[in-house]
Every structure is written in C-alpha cells, then in structure tokens.
Image (cartoon, rainbow, N blue to C red; front, top):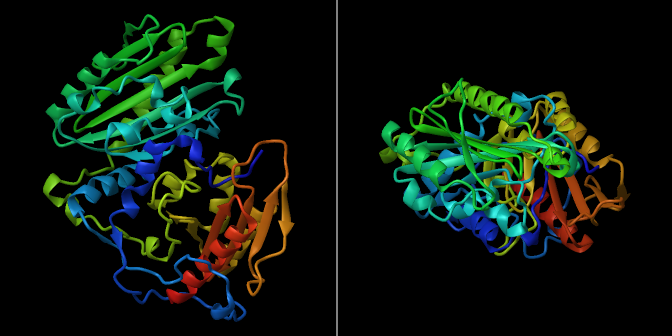
Length: 416
C-alpha cells in the first residue's frame, strides 16, 4: 500500500481534468518576491550550484487576472475546509477515493469520468448541469470506501454546492435529481423519513443511491454505492438510505459554521491567504503529474487527499500540520523545524519506497524510488524541509524529480 498524503492524478484523467488543473495556474501572475520570513537553521546550500532545470526558484506574489472567476474557485476551496471527511460520517470509510475536487462547472465536477471511474460522480447525468443550476457559485466533492478493493466495498461520495440564494438551491436540487443517473438501469425514486424533502434516486442493479438535499443556500449531495452487493446480486436499500441520512446530517451540521461569500464579494477573496502558494513550485503548462487543482487547504481539507487516511491523520497530528499548498509539488506547514524534519523522515521511510541518492549539492533532500506490487505512475519522489516547511515532489524521471526538489528548496530559501 502506498503511504499517506498525496494521492496523485495520472495523465489518464484526460483533458477535462487538465482544464481543471490549469484553472488557478492560468490566472496567476508573478508580482515580485515579497518578504515572508522563515527559520534558516539548515546547513548552508549554495543555491547557484543546484540543477533546477527550467523550474522557477523565486517566490511569487500571486494575483488573479480575473478576480470574479477565481473568486468562485476560492469559495470552493473554502468549502473543502468544512465538508466532513467520509470517515467522519462512517469510521469504516478509511480508503479515500482519488477525485478530491473543488468545482465550479460540470466538467470539473465529473472529471474522473474521463478516466473511466464509474464509482465517482460520473454515475450522474451532468449533461444539463448548467441549465439545472442557475445561481450556482461553487462546490467541493470528496469520498471514501470501506476497502481498498472496490469490488468488496461500499462507498460514499459527498459533495456540497453553494448557491446565490435559498430558492436557487431548492430549485436546483429538484432539477438535478430529475436528471438522475446517466446510466439507464431502471432508476426509481426513494424516500427518507428523516429528510422527507430530499430528492432521492435509486438504481437497484448497481446498488447506488443518490440524495440531493437543499438546506439554505446549500445542496448536500450524497452518493452511496455498495459494490459488493452489486457483484453478489444482493440489495440493501435501507442500509444505503441510512448512510445517506448520516452523510446529510453530518454535512448539514458542519455547514452551520460556513458563511457563504456574497456574490459581489467573491472578487475580494484572498488568493493566497496563508502565504503558502507563493512559495510552492509552479506547475508547468500541461503538467498532469500533480493534484488536479492548485491552491491551499487546511489540515482537515488536505486529509481528504490522503490514500492511507489513518496514517496521514496521525502524521499531521504528530507534526502539527495546519496548512498544505498544491502546485507542481506540495508544501506542508508543520509546527516547527523539528516537526518538518520528522514529517519528511516519516514520509520517506515507507515500505516499497527505496532510498536513492539525493540531488548533487542538496544532501538534505530525501529521495526514493518505488519498488512494489502496485502500479505507480510517478515512482520517483523527493522530500526536503526548510524551517517549518516540508516539501514533496514526484515524477516519472529521476532527473526531473531532482530538478523539482532543487527548485522547490531554492524557492523556500528565497522566500525568506
């Protein structure tokens, strides 16, 4: 099993995910180096001797070319810090699914459909998404299953959509439910006694049940699937309804702490509120070797990207991680410099990750190559710490991962 934080998207995701991945990058521009301060207790490294390839080594103050457009995306990331983890709803759901995703349109909502991931929101009919969702602002989706092997698991996919008004959310819930599933497998309505206003669609052949529940300006969408029962030809609609009800209850409760941003204030949302994105390696054009979005999440939001959720949660708690930023790599902010060193030591000492030499002139980096039973799209990874920050990069090629980690280290140093 690959360890912990950082489930990756491969190029198989296709052009829809590529477009989603480029959303933030396409609206960022460099506006100087800034003056963020960092602890610098590390042994000296001559940055001029590092091979950084074509990667930038200077931090950037990021600005939005289209503040109104990017404001919706930032609202989606804000939701990511509130939407509960699937494990918070059902402790057995410990295997995160890979489509952690902020979204502002149908393409980014069902991007995994391009990779044939029919266990995700690709189940749903999104062809009329725009027509069904006037007043839609932003959303965030996440999910997990009960077993690493999907064929013997049950799964919860959970999403929240925020609208400009209560009426817009209520109307959209009805319209989206009416569109139902994309598969024609005898979809029929179902009913929740706990949430009688929820719009629910049931697909018995695939043992999938979707609930759209409008509450204030929000729609809570819970998609629950029992893959094992579908394989065995068994049915448990009551069990799936109970899990759907739990997802609605847990999510609606968390949303009580979320204050939606007014439409005319979206452009005022800070693009880099923690100052993390400015020091994160810039994603090259067309790069698909990283997460499907750029931006910053708090520790709660970042946990939903962990493949081994329990291990990653423990590591976050152990090292005091409170913020994670994503670009061509990822940067984690730990409690202090000692915690950052602990973080990279734990991340690089994992089964099937074999240590390899670090890049020349950067002996503090820890680099590994995956040798294990599973396919790994990006077998080379490097980690480095600087002050309270720990960085991780990955690649298909050793030389590229060396250049990435060298550039990322230089960027952290230069952001002092």
